[in-house]
Length: 383
Ligand SMILES: Cc1cc2nc3c(=O)[nH]c(=O)nc-3n(C[C@H](O)[C@H](O)[C@H](O)COP(=O)(O)OP(=O)(O)OC[C@H]3O[C@@H](n4cnc5c(N)ncnc54)[C@H](O)[C@@H]3O)c2cc1C
Image 1 (cartoon, rainbow, N blue to C red):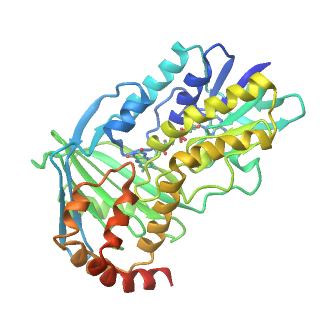
Image 2: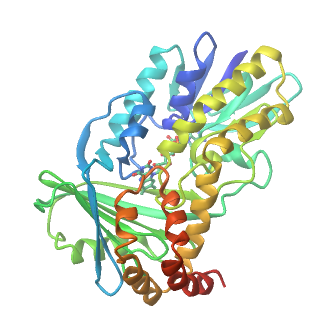
């Protein structure tokens, strides 16, 4: 019997397998032929998140500032002397994480699809399209539409956004500064991005799911407005992001991580940093569970307590800010742009930490002058 079967060979699965495999029999099953493709990511990571991943992905560019374009066309500049984030080759990151998991002793079966599983008092029996596997624990790292997550009850995320983007051959001459557009015209319920790197530009956007809109139409519009519609599209990426968390990240003999656990930053849609924060806690819980043969949902709940202690506050505060954001009309957003242009606010936004972006909200709303101006908009958004 295996110690753990990890379903999903994305970053959540391979980071977890790499940590768990030390002296243990860990198997990862991944439906695709390799880790990393198809890409479902814009590849924006902070230096801290890359350090925590523990491998060195190819770095394509760096980001030191952003121009935020509001619905009426108003521009708000955020600038910093230091690197706010790096633009990486996400497929390369995933491949390197998988190689490291294998080096540490995990086995990865590619081209193997999880079909179902059954938990009994003594084991988890996992059915795949190439046979059955028995294991002491199952780790659901099977992404945004996780079936393992649904095996522990009604466990859908609160909402999804759909994302789509492309790398195009285009030299903007504005290296290090990304452009973000907000408002219903380009990215209803989220934002779009244009990130120059050398002779290339990575563009993309997410939109709120359930609006009946097609992200591809928004992408065409974005390429048009940013003046790059006739350039060569070198590659495309797309995907779905679960936001607002799930009800549970554990069950009997079951642990969930990454998108499967709803561990995604609600303001930016970033999933890599939360995975890096949660994985060591999952490892500690799983190790103790295997050592002491305590595999009940009650025992494994300590994993959720642990990761929520680390990142739960940022995720829930971020989701509250997102709810206010999605409640604002285009006119309200333009009004916000005027308010945040205040000399008192600008330095706070320049210092934003992209791994903990919601932290910037606290000092802003503590300023009575700014709070009084933001309050009516916030109340309207919530109501
Ligand atoms: C458009 C877009 C842009 C994004 N940009 C960023 C960004 O810039 N920075 C950032 O940090 N995050 C970003 N994200 C989020 C990030 O990509 C995800 O949070 C991250 O990939 C989650 O990793 P994961 O391992 O949980 O899931 P995934 O990467 O989705 O991996 C899950 C794996 O499980 C496999 N799988 C699923 N079902 C089965 C099955 N039945 N059998 C076998 N295998 C299965 C899948 O094939 C997949 O390989 C973005 C997401 C999107 C959609």
